[in-house]
Image (cartoon, rainbow, N blue to C red; front, side, top):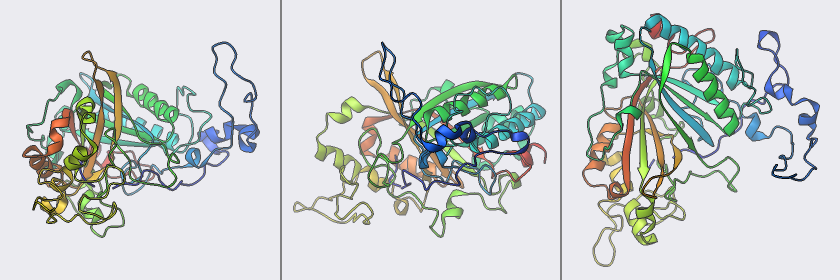
Length: 426
């Protein structure tokens, strides 16, 4: 959980058209019909009967439902968009006997499905109708390749050096069965049913070509839940992501994306995703006093301001001392250790989800952060920061890294292309 900011909400995109012509058929927006468009509350006047809950009041598609991300573009969706309310991460392994041809056919199917679902349309085939009443809800689907994918498809010579396995870290307690994978898909949306609908479509599209290796589910605060857009809070109650690189930064593209002239050529305008399931030891954390929690992080819990003073965006004064000559921001504070200017300029765009998978056998919550960070080169982004955290981060006592993955995420698909086509057909 590094000290870097991504807004919790995003400005809604293009509203969904009422009908899509041609083979694409009717959009989910059109399926709402006149009742949805005018806000008539079909059945909403009735109260609960027996054990049935009263239905939600019908309303026109809100700004949440109408928000739309575009599938085609320079970069894949799901990287620079704001945090979404819910998400699914899923890794696949190619089936025995499946190789480059089967992988290409799978990516072609996935891309066609992603394009339709992100536009608010039904899946190309076998649609489950789970999300037929919703707009796109800022749905994004993002696809990546793991280290093992290249040997499975005979493309070892095309495997990027930046995809070399991550080194071992002292904080690792990794479950290998829930780590890595040949293929990785990130799904995010501002509606839970829209996200689940996309997950099922992707799983069904895999067919006999690939099997699920692991899957994780996450959430963030819903857009509009706060009076104004703000940095998200994690399950420890801390503002999480204050110093994230921003697309408006002059060096943002260089830090986050592989240049168009980069190597290998198929990764042009792509990025690398480090995925970590970080369990938070919440019972231990919540036993700390507010002051102790703030000392661990180096920021005020209420508003994210550095302990050296100011507001959330005020630069942290690492040299400021108190009346006893002690640093106001402790040397082991998480926010001090993760600063890019203390890590050779290492920067990564963090775009996480929180998760809660119930209560463990020992009675403690299985909850924490699905950490996802994006960078042009993980050996210069994630790795040096994590090594430094290993050497003395006060937060390490309250978290446990339980799963890990590194994936090469190629650039966006142009019109008429599928994701990864330049690798699989190059």
